[in-house]
Amino acid sequence: MNTEIVTMTAQGQLTIPKEFRTAFGLRGSTKMAIRKKGNLMIVEPRSDFWDLKGSLQSRVKKSDRAVRAARTVFEKKWARTM
Image 1 (cartoon, rainbow, N blue to C red):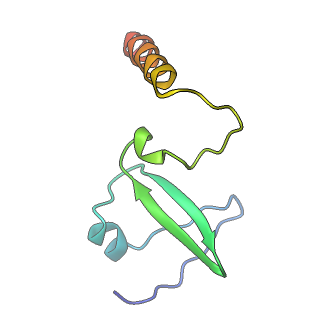
Image 2: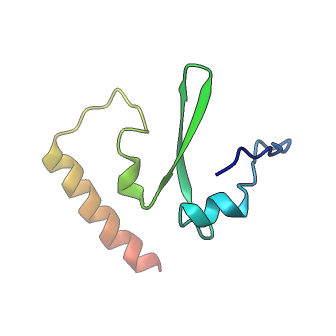
């Protein structure tokens, strides 16, 4: 895969070239994790919400049981709004 030059819009958006989207199986709206490593910007596709684990930093600490309980409540309430 070749290096491609892309432009960032005033809103901070980039268009990922089709060759890259195809190679990584990206279709439609996709969440990405972005991190800085030295002078590089690394962008990694995430397939679902739970793949984002660790990308949302917080000082709040919850036990695994509390997180699972919150997830269950979220799934039940979210399903009712759809």
